[in-house]
Length: 199
Image 1 (cartoon, rainbow, N blue to C red):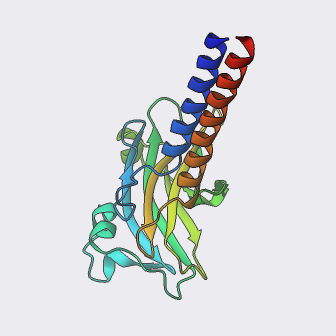
Image 2: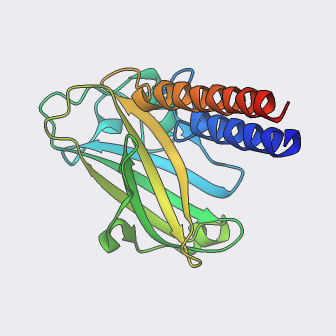
């Protein structure tokens, strides 16, 4: 009985840890840009707001958009779209689609997000150029934007993440952790009751 109880508690704790760590890759400050350079080769060249390159509006020339976004956090205001332009390649496989996710939502893919790729990009480890158009009309609260790539095997990889309208925090993480901890307590309490009955 003790062994079963220990296994149950370990399982619930594992779920709690996974839930707590889910979704946000840079939880301390989501306005900073997170890149997955471990699994992908990435270059984020330019960010556009409503089709206008922000790199031409005092941010400097094309290239290193992640540094510009960190230095100039984006407030959406009346904008309708943010476009993330660059190139990426999955190191162990190949990216076949690009898309985005808002907060903890499901990824949205569009074949038009993949663009013609030059030899220089391929030689640098890129599978394709991308222009990911993210709808932001009406967003007022802090919102996490995640650029995603889908591999040939169907696996979805996050590869860029940043927040607009200020620091985004996952409202579900704390609640899920509390629920998981409560579940551990219930399992432990059940174990005490069973132990007393056995005696």
